[in-house]
Image 1: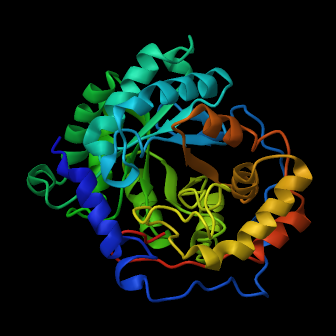
Image 2: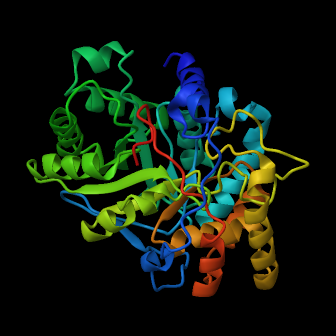
Length: 375
C-alpha cells in the first residue's frame, strides 16, 4: 500500500475532516444545553472484562468485551510519530491486555498505510500469550477514497478486494468485523452493501459495519444490507465527553432500537481526557479529534480528576467508564504497558448517575462535517 495514505488522512483531518480543525477551527466549543437529559442514555450495568456485546452476523455472531484496543497509532508516523523502537512496549501491552480478557482489537487499512495491520498480524502470531486466534475479535476497515482506482472502477467489488489485501497483511484467513471507514465512497449505499455482502458470503468476515455514518445513512445501510440477509452490526463514530454529537443527534437511541452496537473512537479525545495533557502540556497539534485549546477543556479535566480521586482510578478509567455508561464500546489506543494497565481499570465498577451528570455538565456538544464525521 502506498505510504501516502496515512499522510493523506492527516492532511484531510487538518483541513476539515475533523469537526475542530480546518475551516471549523474558528468556532468555540458549545456546552450541551443545561436542560438536556443525558441520563436518558445511561445503561444499567457494571462493565466487566467479559463478553458483553453482540456484533450480529449473517451466519455467526461475534461476542466482544466492553472495550476495544485501537491500532491507529501502530506504524503511523504522520499522526503518532511511530518508530519501531516502540514495538517491544506494544508487544508487552498487547500480551497483558488479551491475556486479561480484553480481546477486541480495531485497526484499518489506512492506519500506518497498512503497517498497523502488519503489526497486528505479528502480535496475534507471536505476542498473544497463548490466547488462540479464535478467542480474539479482530476488526478492520475499508477506506473508500475516490483517489483509489480500484474504488472507482470496482465500486461493488472494492470492499472484497481490499479485505483480501488486509487479510494478507494480518496473515489471517478471516476477521470478525469489517467496516466501511467513512461515507465518502463513490458508489451508492446499495452498491457498498452488495460489496459488504460479498465479503460475508465469501467467509472472509463474520459481521460488517460502518464508521462515521450519521443516523440517516446508517439506517439506509441497515436496510440495504437486509436485502442480502445481513444485519448491520455496528457504527463507529467519534464520541466522548468533548463530542457528544452522536448522543444529541439520536445516534445512541437509533443504535439501541436497531440492535446496532455503537463504538466510540477517540473516546479519550486523543489523550486530552486521559490526564496526560493539560494547559502546561498540550496534546500534539497532529491530534485533530476534539482538538480544543487546553484551557477550554480544563473545567472538564477538573471534574474528571476529582471523580478519579474519589474512586482511586486513573483519569482515563473515568473517561472510558463514562462512555460505557452511555452504552458505547470505547475504542482506545495502546502502545505501552502503562496505558493498558490504566485503561483496564475502567471496568469492575461504575460511575453513579450523579457523577455522570457532573461530567455531562462539562461536556461539549460537538459538530459534524460533510467530509468525514456525519455521525
